[in-house]
Length: 209
Image (cartoon, rainbow, N blue to C red; front, side, top):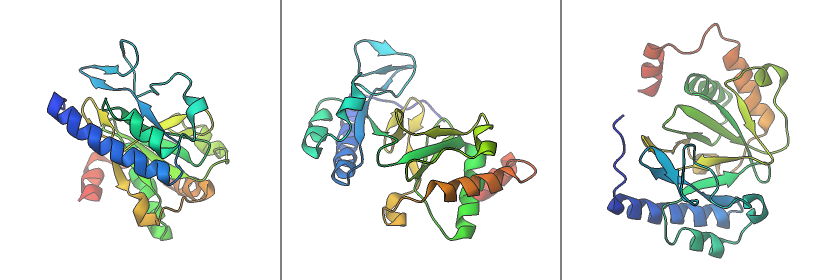
């Protein structure tokens, strides 16, 4: 993928879209936060630039969880901040690699249970769930699987990355804004892991069609 051209006009357009998404989620009670945004090969939004992102703009971000929608709107008035959501409060997120994500999404379809899924341009998928359940032993042992719970956060669409934009693989509207039990997603991930191998590149192309 070609490097995204984050010109001033693009930044302005994305800021408006990010602001609208952030306010909408805040009205639904999701604990959204402004995050750093790409500036060339680095991330801006805090003092100076950083090499890794996106991360919360405010270092006291945990104290800002639950901020009212009016203040959320003010955060996105001037800059195209990434849209982050704090985990461990309203929702958790189980992060996996692209291959496992595709397979687990397929398993969930066989269950007849769509769940909100976020994908990043860096090949990471995040399954959003209800909070409070630790990872099963076999999932916790896989270094490609991360549970984002209390004290963590994940990016949400349409947050910009250097080489693209975070997007929904399954939008919350498809699920009626209902978050699944973590156990359901973990069962799907365990089933996907139990298959002989993760998807081959050709299989991924077929799955994407």
